[in-house]
Image (cartoon, rainbow, N blue to C red):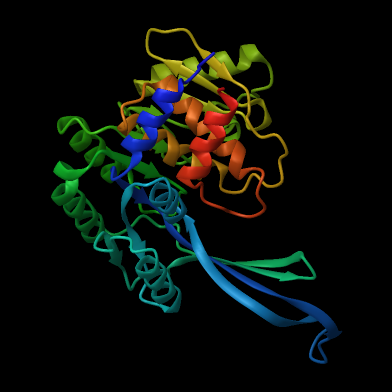
Length: 331
């Protein structure tokens, strides 16, 4: 079992500040329209929602970037938005967060990935998705890679956040990993199904249970199943580490040449698991960049996920709250 001393926690807290992390992947905009239903439309038998409030937040890879920022890091988001109203809102959120926007490429041939939720009387009525799942064009791919290349010497880590929306193509994935390994920059991955086995030779690969089940075509229920799945992925990807997230059962950590380790979940009262995976990959990468080993980094990431699961909605982890919680529970 991992145990962090007060001095070690203070070291992490200090070392988190100013770490520069690139987040590359599918940037998204989350929209929310809140209101009440007081009548049925005369045009069709559907409820009319009178909107009382509307707001927008970062989603997808952009939410990972926000988590890095809230943990005290300097985030460099690299991705694609469309030449549309959602893209304008996304850009305004970047400015509001004081986030570097030079790595965001505008592609007029595709929409900004946006998920808009309509909520009436505290119940989600419908979600409207705007997206393209086609791979980005070669010229867009080149712009993304060229920008990363221009930043690589100043980076402490890279996160690849894949939602299968076309930004992380197999070609781009390979080029990014080769560059990171050549420049000795740690690289972590939060995968989805399509490109799962393209992520060869990374520092940490972090699938969840469902992603691993889908790609391995097996059910992961027992401890034996977890061990088997983790070892297969570790071997196939030649990754330094595999972190398999298991929801309420915590996480399993697999290192090359070492025994598997398990960590139970730290959530005391689960209110909402939305965004927990984003928090895990952001905290994990920050902790590794701050000088932690994989077990220390996984331990902090597990705590961070537990904290955000106690909140309703997609809420980024704050560095102060993370380290206060870890210090209190390690006494």
